[in-house]
Image (cartoon, rainbow, N blue to C red):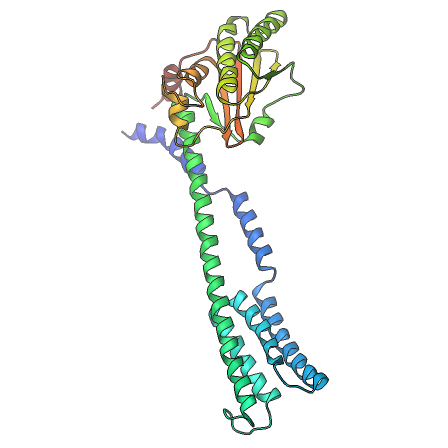
Length: 340
């Protein structure tokens, strides 16, 4: 039992690492938050105070310029809205309170009574300022809280999707004996080398046949993986046929190396649904509009490595076949975990 637990620990650690949230994604998210906020809290506080002072000065200047004291106190809604957006309801209400105190002291100084002003017009305007700034503070502050919750929910959803994709990648890799790799388009591109030796457009079923004959002919001329031509032919034909019949056509590219051949098939379809991905690639006889019953299973059985990228923009498959004789999926799994 101890030996079993010891041998399985690395695999468990691998799954744990795969399920961790991508640190690059976290850094990008923090940068997006910073761009959304524009200012740090201390800077936002300073700006709020400056806006209060400017609102006071602007109101006084407009009163003098127009000889009419109303309704320029509405300028105080600007700092209140700013304070609420950065500090929530509490910060907005504190800014509103500061606005009311400043207005009472500097804009309505005629009356000595703290609550009763010199005339009804001043009373009405002060009341409107109190309710106006208070309402703006509450509404803007609540909107900030709602947007914060929506951002958190979206971040949690992205993290959950990343964990699901990482888990699916590890499971499919393990179940196929290290053959099937779920990748991004960028990851597949890093596995390509130079200009392809064969480039062919896939539009009709005859193009899949043409690709098969071309690959076999070139492989024989170059004397590459001659003992694996059957596997190469099977995998390339299945991938190309899928692209034509279920992927609205696509492109095929082939690279001949010293001891291996790589075939890239890229279609124009709508991709494989995440809910059907495991069955489409692993289940013998499973068939949907994007999968020929035995297609993916036969590809996995035939190649040494298969990189798969699928999305709503299409499916890209990179097949690699080397010189050594191919083992079955069951043999690969047994060899991979023979020490357990």
